[in-house]
Image (cartoon, rainbow, N blue to C red; front, side, top):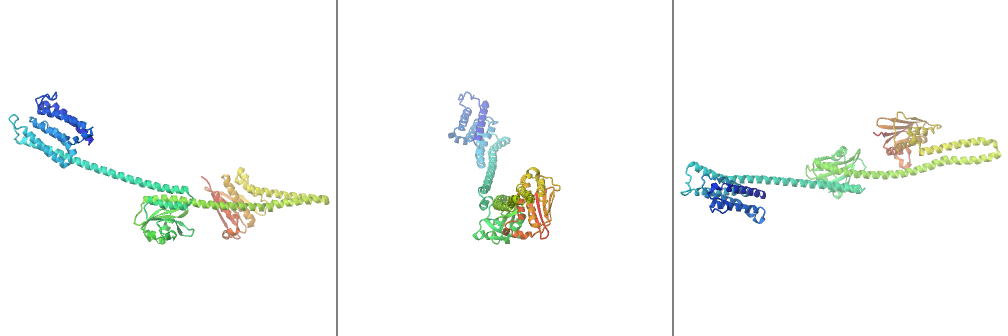
Amino acid sequence: MLGGDRFYAIARWGVVFLLIAISGILTDSPVWPPLQSLEPIALLIWGYTLFSLLVSIALFVPPLGPLLSIAFAVDLAVLTLLTFFNRDAHDVLYPLYVLPLVGAAFRLNSSRSLWAGLLTAAAYVAAFLFARIGPDNGSVPRDALSLVGLTLRAAMLVFIPWITGSLAERWSASNRQSVALAEQKTQQAYTEAQAYRDQMRALYEVAYALATTTNYQNVLNVALLESRKLVPHRCAVVLLSTGEPDELFVAASNGLSESGQVARLQVGGGRIGTALYSAEPIMVEAIGEDPEVEPLAEIRACRSACLVPLRSGINTYGLMLFAAEHERAFSEEQLGKLATLASYALVALQNAQLIFDLRQERTKLLSKEEEVRHQLARDLHDGPAQALAAITMNIEFIKRLLDRDPARVIPELDKLGALSKRTTHEVRTMLFELRPLALETQGLDITLRQYLERFQDNNTNIVLDTGNVDVAFDTKTEGGLFNIIQEAINNALKHARAKHIWVRLNQTATTLEVTIQDDGVGFDLQKVKESYEKRGSFGLLNIDERASLIGGKAEMSSAPGEGTIVRVMLPLEG
C-alpha cells in the first residue's frame, strides 16, 4: 500500500496545482498571496494544500500513518465543499472526484466501496443543488436533459468505486491464488529437494560403508537400512546362492522374523527364478502368491515387489527383493533407484569374492612354491648331484689306473668326458627351464626352438609349428605361455610314453591359440580331477591356473589310449 499511497500523494499534488491554476474561474478573489482573501474557495484551496503537505509527511513518519487511511474521505469532503461554493453551472470540479473514489476503492472492499460511492453521490447532488438555490445563483435545473445529466454524474460517482473495488478484489484474489500456487510449488520443490538429499545421503552411507569395510555383510545391512529413504516398503531381503543348484539363502534382511532370516528358498520358474535368469530389475504384482516365497511369511503378506538381480557379467550372486503391502507400490523411477543401490551391494560381493580368491591364490602360490622347491631338490638330487658323485668316483678310479693299468686310462677319461657333457647339458636345461633369458631378448618362437633342441636325442619326436603367428606379447605373458608349453611337454614325456608331441601356435583375428598334443597312453581326466586333492599335484591341472593368470583360458581333453590335447586361448589386445 505504501507504493499506492506515494502515487496517490503525487496525484493529490497534481489536483492542488490544478485547483490553484483554475482558482480564477472558481472565485473572483485572488488566492495569492495566501490568506489575502477570506473567500471560502480560497480558504479551502489553501487548507487542502496544507492537508496534502501533511499527508506527504505521513508517508515518511510512521506515527502519522493512520492519516493515510482517511485521506480519501478528506479529499471527497473538500471537493464536495468546493462544489457547494462553486457557482459555475458547468461544474468543472466533477472530474476531480475520480481520484479519491479510486483511492477509496483500493482501500475498501466492493460493498464498502459501493456505500462510499452512494454517500459521495448524495453529497455531490446535494451540494450541486444547494449551490444553485437563491436569487443570485440561477435556478435548480428542471429540464429533462439537465436532470438526466445530473443523474448520470451521480451514477458515475456510485459505480466508479464499486466497479474499481470489485476489480481490485478480483485482482487481489487472483494474486492471492498465484501466491498460494507459488508457495505450493515452493513447498513441493523443497520437499523434492529434501527427498533428493535423503536419497543422496542414503547412497553416500552405503558407499561409505563399502569404502570402510571389507565385510560384505555390513554393506548389505546398510544398503537395506538406507533403502527405506529411497523407496518406502514393508520388508526387504538379500538372497544369495548357497552353492547348491537353484537354492538361495537369506544373507541380509529388514522386516523379517527370526524364522525368515534363516530360511532357504528353492527357485525355478517363479518370479524370483525368472528375475535371476533375465538379470534385469523387474516389478511384480501378487508376489505373495508366488510359491518360491513360501518360507518368507512377511513376503507372502505383500502384494507388490521389486526384484533386483545381483549380477556381474556371467556371474549371478543372487538378488535383492523389496516388497510392499499394497498393489502398484513402486514406480519405474523407484526401481531405478533400487537398482543403483543394488550396484553398491554387488561391488561389496565382488570385493568379497576377490578377497576370497586372493586368499585361495595365495595358498595355491605358497603350495606351488613349496612343490617347486621339492621338485627342484629332487631334480638336483636325481640329476646333477648323482652325476657329480659319479664324476668324483671316476676321477678316483682313474687315479688308481695310472699306477696299475695305464692302458685303460684313456677310455675311462672318454667316459668321464661324456658324463661331464651330459651333466652340463642337464644343468643348462634346468637353468633354461627356470629362467629362459632368451624370452627377454629373442621372443617366444626362438626360445621354444632352443628349448626343444635339448630333446633331439630323446626317443620322443617333438614337432614345433608356429604357423602364421606374428604377434608379440609382454615378457610376463610370453613367460606364462612358455611355462604352460614346458609343463605340458614334461607331463607328456614323463607320463604319456608318447612317440610324438606336436606344439602348434595359430593366430586368428582375436586370439592366439596354442595346442600341445601327444599320441601317448592318455588318461581319464575326470578321475584325475576328482582325486586331485589325494594325489597332491598333477601338472595338467595347474595349466588352467597359469592360463588365467595371463588372461587366457585353457582346455584339456584326454582318454585312455587316445593321447592328450592341451589347448590354450589367449585374447589379442586391440
